Image (cartoon, rainbow, N blue to C red; front, side):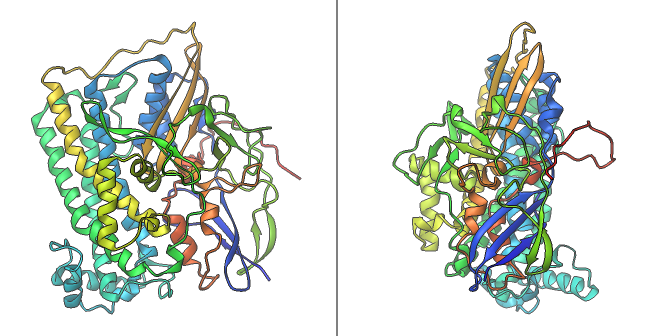
Length: 566
């Protein structure tokens, strides 16, 4: 007899996500549904506003990857009006994007995802001296992993436990048998968790040097950037380099060793050796390095055919709302997309926790739309980016992937797993960090001949425009689409990474990456579904990007009439 497991909310993410699965008598997941419970409304807010304000407004979509939406909103307008920005502006935007990646991926691995791999309670029984020796197995220069560092970490966590105020370590499934790290390995990871709290601040400061602040930077405008004095200041350039060196050092001496440690410990754990139901991947060209070179190239892989990476066709993208709480008769291209809410509610049924409201999988059950590429679901994100570039023979990516596989002794097929998705995020972080100085050098070289950072945009109110931007955000391919009429925004749509990954079933019954990643996995204890959370976290969900908006002061942002089902 099947049982329903409800995980609501999925914690340690940005936004509101609910996951429900059906398990059979052997606790194997036979079906899965992911639902976001907060309405998306940013498109409605954009209508009638000046396109020049698009970037500043849409970056409020999210409080984490604010810069990505900021940049995408600006560049969608630039594409619409046919404006090419100066090279200095392109390089400065790239430097800010690189800082964002170094911040976001470190925060995700340690503060959002690590506790799915690391048993904090186990670390309390570790031998700090032994743990210090274990750390040397994964790097000859471990950071925050000397015996004294580890003993201090252990005492710090023990004090939290003794007070009963566990903070971020509360309400977890400690002791779950799918945890595989030894007490000493757990202690090393907890130490790095705490150290990463310091490092993420430095990465935020990197962004603020050229962005003005973090989050919600303010130096991008349609036509270029405004951080001219920072660009021309040798002291500011050097400050960026110093902070870059600090964060890169942590990536190499903590993040990389911890992923190697996890790969060794979990290489036989079934719950992390699946998690790949969709075998279609998409990534786009991004990260200008100078002289026309980009760190990552773009393309689409369908049916896992690595020998046939196709160029992205923007016209092939449509959003389906058959099982989403929106009203639309057919899949819509983003240029013509609508965001008309149609909430139909939930239904009560028995679960492993008793009777609860649950999604109505036969009807509508999520505020996330379902993007499709030529009718097919697509996974986006660091893994998709690496697979596209590996398949295209990008030498940097091939060397990084092959190097990690050689160190771990794992085959290429290991990338197609939850563990592989987590490792791919590390490799992407390293590649971005290593290449960032090339972007800086290209900026300095270009400034010797040209100091321009801005081209004045012109919008003719008698003409109509449409344009889009497609970039790589930390969670994957992000696109913003705008139509301009009478000098105002007539329509606006954002198709974000988490929408691609978290969308519900479409009209053809095809599930997206989140849902398919869970089917077939066995749970040790359905009432403590750590395995579900670990798989979902490997995508780095950002539901605030996929669905929004809220106003904490309770101010009326607008009045909307929602067609509710009976």
